[in-house]
Length: 199
Image (tube, rainbow, N blue to C red; front, side, top):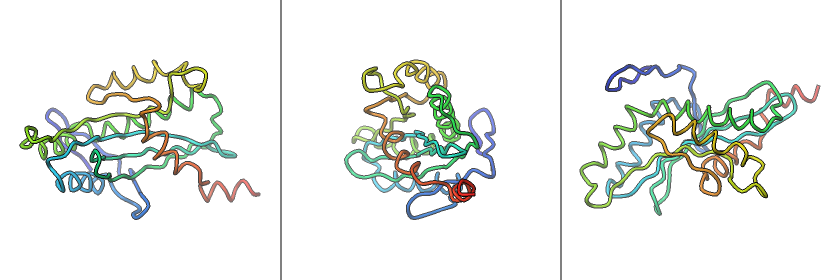
C-alpha cells in the first residue's frame, strides 16, 4: 500500500496491523478511514491526534504497544493500537525508552503527510467556528527526578520528536496515550511467548 504525499510516495508496510477493544486486524487504511470519519462527525470541534508507546518486559521478550488516538476535546475519542514484540528482555531503561519513542515516530510518520492533510482539510472550512487540530507524540517519561527514573533521558527523546517536525512532544503527566492508553494493553502476555515460558 502507498500514500502519495506532495513530494513523494510513502510506502506502508503490508504487515502493519492495528486493533482495539472491538476490532482486530485493522489495516492502516482502515485506521485512517475511521479517524477521518470520527472527525467528520463534528467538524466544528477541537481535536488532538496523538501517538504514544509503552512497554512491558516479560520472561524472554518485551512487549511494546503503540497507541493511536484521535480525541475530540471534551467529547470522546476513537483509538486503536499496534503491538510489537521484541524477543529480548529489555532491562536497560534508556534502550527501552528509545525504542518506545522510535516505534511512536514510525507510526506517526505514516500519518504525517497524506492522512494529516485529510484531517486538516475536513476542519479547515470551520476554523473560525472553533475547529482545530493539534498533533502530538507522547513520551512515557517524566521530568521530575524524584518520581521519574526516565528524567535523565527526557530531553534526548523530546529532541528526537522535534527533529521530525509536524508533531509536538509531550511528557508525563500530559503523555496519556503512552502512560495510560498504551500502558493498559501492555500487561497481558503474548500467548505464544507465554506458552514457551511454561516449558
